[in-house]
Amino acid sequence: MKRKLLAWVLLAAAAQVHAQIEKRDVHIAVGGKTALYYLPLTLTERLGFFKDEGLNVRISDFAGGTRSLEAVVGGSADVVAGAYEHTINMQARKQSFQAFVLAGASPQISVGIATSRAASYKSPRDLKGLKVGVSAPGSSTNMVINYVLAKGGLKPTDVAIIGVGQGATVIAAMEQGQVDVLSQTDPAMTMLEKEGKIKIIAETRTPAGTEQLFGGPMPAGSLYAPVEFIKKNPGTVQALTNATVRALLWMQEASPQQILATVPEEYLLGNKAMYLFAYNNVKTAYSKDGYFSDAGAKTTLKALASFNPAVKPDAIDLAQTYTNEFVKKAHAKYGKKK
Image (cartoon, rainbow, N blue to C red; front, side, top):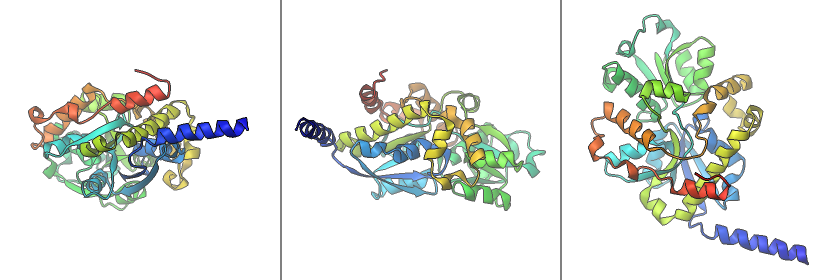
């Protein structure tokens, strides 16, 4: 009898917590889920952390970050798993989006030139006229190559931007000669580099590489949504944040083998050893706690303004592009405070 009573009390307590969720069925749009860039999202899903928070999460995968953002703008998805920078770009277009939990402390994007062209490459200026493969035009991979071009005094229009998706299609695009340069995430870039097919000319796989390229911290993968959605569904957003923070904390303790065992087989691109090598390349790029920093937001704004005249720093209210409110509550729940 006591056991039944205890079970009833626990169920009632769980129901009370989950009753605060305004929207249990949440549709997340992501651009290139198989990439290591989105590993925290995959782990949160695969480990059942969304379900533990009372959510039924459906994840739709698109060719790149701009496509997933379009899904939310169009109303077919609720939340974007994508680069924080899009919240700034959208504010510049008079649309209010806000990021509420950070998964990537660095972009994990590398720029590599075909080995056959590497000898003639001396600086970003030498990229003029080349074909550059990105996940999708307007995506974070596109942003990074635009910034590299700007450092060489070039404009985005000085190269041909080609959307090649993520994963296996990236490798095929380089091997088939469809592109001369790639601005892409791992594990594809590590695989091409190790096979001697590209030479890396810029990377943000690590905080040090990010600092070297951008001159400061550069927040990357996050969950973000229209401000209106966040205001209407704070309980839902809190549950999404709780699950993500829990996954980030799990990652801090997990071994590479545990990571490998959790990721779907098809994400490994047929080479477990190379996937692990790529993971080790980028593991310092993940956020340890989910918090956004003011310094990172400022670096992002400066980078975007360097090549996009529509982004005017004086007209952007950075404080509205992200919030740490939900992350703080998530840490209070899981015993880690800041």
